[in-house]
Image (cartoon, rainbow, N blue to C red; front, side):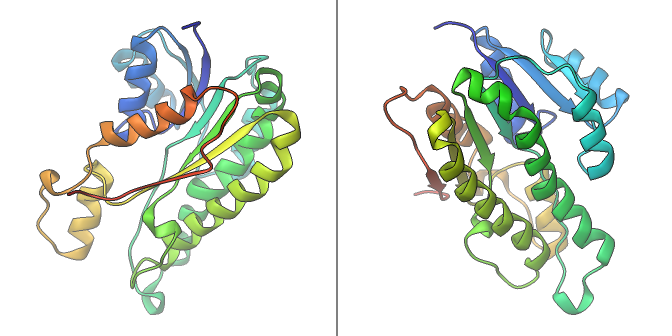
Length: 231
């Protein structure tokens, strides 16, 4: 397979880290978004061969400026937004800063990345993969902020898919249930529950689904993939 070029968020842990390692192992080129110079150095150490772009997804104006001045590749085979943050709270106790952070990182950053990457994605007839969540399909108690951001990601993907069809850009949304990641461990702590990684989907399983969407022949597309913990 010819080496391809990917722009990826969330490569520091969980699904994004698993995906980045697999793409590098097969010889693809990666541009990884890192929130700080320190994080960029960690990614360069852990994923040798990948390039990094320092941009804070939690600061939309700064992210927009960074992307406008960035030397993005002329062709991108994919943009994968796997980064995300979560803060659980009942609506009555929701902190505005936490609400806004979830919208900024999970939703607004996705839009800004897509906006900046579209010329390169169109040039390569590439694929956008937005790693969503089961919370993007149904909002449980205490999940309003996170679910609101993920419902928004679903809307972004659906609109983008229809808009970019004529340009040959495919858009896939992946809706995993609970995945054994550091975020899931944090969620369990917020819920006051004991965490056992073996109860949940492995990050590699979600990476398999993303790779399937990226590697699908050009005559078809996978609009949505929903994964649930087995059996």
